[in-house]
Length: 375
Image (cartoon, rainbow, N blue to C red; front, side, top):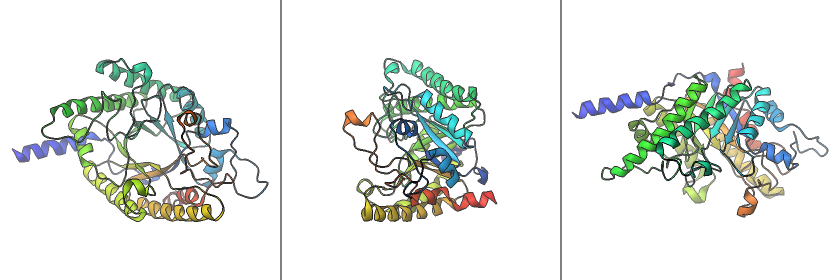
């Protein structure tokens, strides 16, 4: 009986993701999430190719493309009050990125604001939906976003069904925890979360049959086999595993950056072996703050951390690339929604205080694996 159960579960793992580890090396992504770009430009922020005095402003996407960027990630909220990162804003940035020859990743949050391991808030317009209606909302929203791109002649290469969802999405309906043998209610929650994921998967394939569907979790250094096993057992589907990695968040993780990078490499390799699908680093971020010698010291350390991490990921054939999260942020800029919340500016962007790409960002964009593919 144990052999039968083991065989059945192995079959489930092999059918959970459809794209295998023979994904082409040519699809390696040196990417950036630039979702704040249009709001920054609206606020008058400028970007420069160098820190040289008198250097004229440059188009951020074109400048990063010249430095080696080949992919852009863009988030989508259902209906955020400011309008930024909603469908129309995403579409405007996607058209600009596609015109620059960029591969496109769409990150659907299924929320009106940031979705992450601590927040997976149901959109206001969906708050009274029952499970069946919520499933249909996931389907319709996914199709609405992807068909908007299709109508513009844009074919995204990847789409995320949810953002950083180790605890599920659309809370409380789709909130999940680590399964335990004596908690049957958790099984019902996993059925709902897996249902949302699978509905998003099917809708994405309806719009673009060969799109890579990503399920994305945080903390690349943590091996959460229980999450992927439970999602598989409850019928969840994906093509690619997505991870976030912030190795300089020492106070949260209780590891050195060297340990974080080493653990992330070990985790990526294990995920590929166990679940037979590629892995994408959907978010990475390094510290980037200060002025003068303080900034120089932080920037040098960030570049050291990035160099080590990129080197580790490059040597894993089925790691498909890395996206820097909002690297264009600098100078204390903060989005409109942060102001009433009393939040400060994001301090892990990757531009210098003068508005030019930092060494860490250039290290990622000049990946040796990309250079190899261009030969």
